Length: 319
Image 1: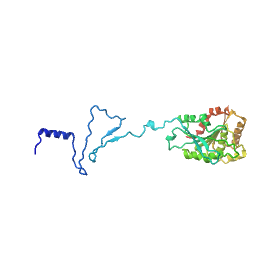
Image 2: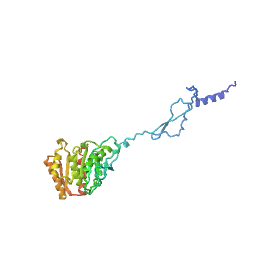
Image 3: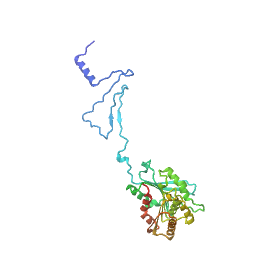
Image 4: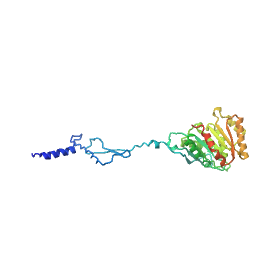
């Protein structure tokens, strides 16, 4: 056998030192080859915190196979992005198929800022009725959503939902059970599809003019549903003192809703007389309520000028 010269032997040993080959047996009697990662050139820039880091794994038992363990960026948002920064709520349009009315019951609904990002949160709900000759857009046109956005953003009120139904006045000879449609169809639909507080303390009802008449009727006859009612320049729909007095007397003393009534000082006589009749009936029955007379006429300007007062009052018991 020929002998390697000393020079060739030295070169062979140096080559092995640079690229070692592990010939130790594996479980399947194959040679395991460990490939070392080449060192980076001296001028290679280091990996920064914003880069995707690539690391070589420890030695594996799989023959002749090297994988790289890629560290992905974290899915957790920075604190500044994980907190909702919305300042404005959203308004959606909806409809409930009605078996009680001659038309499907349309409505608008205001959802407060961050509603979609707070899936566990339940909200108080304010039902608002429009005046005769208007539609479900009236409260929106007055600026209710902008005022509530502002009050929520400044932490002056807790976030709440507003539902604004559209009462299409029916000229047929059939009865118009709008109140039943609200209680039996609209309210269950809202509470099934939106995250609302389902106790009376978490519901309020209010309205303007003709809508104020509906708010009074719903708030008194369904006292177990609504914890507060507001009537703004109201036209009372049923001025039968015997009927209304009997309804008021059915309300337990500890379940009397909060009541807010306001009038302009230049309302039409029929509106002033209607509202004062209801206020006198509440006094006669010993039912506490707030009565306000402001400067103004029976028009959009009057209600818009006092809208923030109304909305603050509704939200005052929601914390």
